[in-house]
Length: 275
Image (cartoon, rainbow, N blue to C red; front, side, top):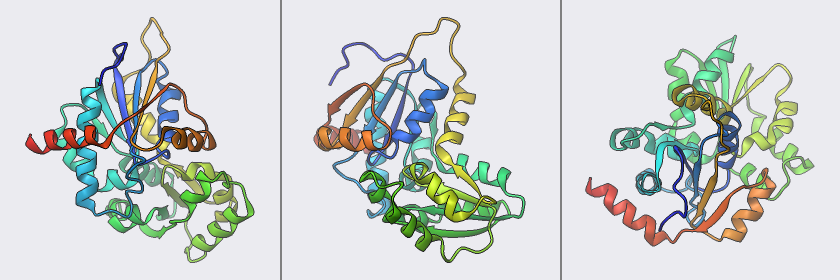
C-alpha cells in the first residue's frame, strides 16, 4: 500500500474506533503544519472487552504499520491500549511514542487542591488500574468508575440528551468528595457539558486529549518559519461509511479515508513479533 504523495513529518495516531479523533483534533489545533496518519481499528472495536495480551498485539502491529507509512512519532489515542501496550511500544518502536494516560495523570495532579480525584472510563481502562496506580503513586486519593454505556450514547449523537444526563448521574452517584475528575475515555470530551453539570462547578474536568497534544507539541516543536497546512490520511479496518458517519457525529473528519484489510495488520503484527 502506497501513498500518492509522501507525508511530511507525519505523526501516527491510532484508536480502536473514532474516539481517538478527539485527540487528533487537539493535535491538529496545536500542530496544523504536521501531516497525520490516523488508524481506526473499527473492525475489532471495542478494545476494552478484549484480553490485554490481544490488545498489546493489535497495538504492536498498528504501530509497525504506521511507521511503515512514514510516521515519525506515534500517539496511542486509546486509553485501553495506552494502559496495556504503551510500555512495550516504547521499548520496541524506533520513534517517540505517547499515550493519553500519563498526560492526564499529570494534569490531574496539577489541578487537584484537596488530593481527592476521580477517574471515569471504559471497563478496560478502569479495570487495568492504570490511572489509579499512577495517581495513587503521586499521593492522591482516587475514586474510579467504569461507564461502559457512555461511548454508545456519544456515537449515537445523544451526548446532550436527557438519557446522557441520566446515565452520567447514575455513574457518578457513588462518588465521594472530589475536586478533579479525569475523563479517561477519548469519547468523553463530547459529554463535557453534561458531566460538568452533574459533577458540579467545583470539580475540574481533565481532558487527556488536550494535555497529550500539549506534551507532543512541546517535544516536537512548533510550526516552521515557512508554514504549509498539513494533510491527514485515515485508515479504517471496518466499514469506511460507518466510520465517516460516526466521525461526523463527534466533530467531523478531514482527509482521505482508506479501507485497510485486517490481513495487512496481521502481516505487520507478525513482523513486530519477529523483532
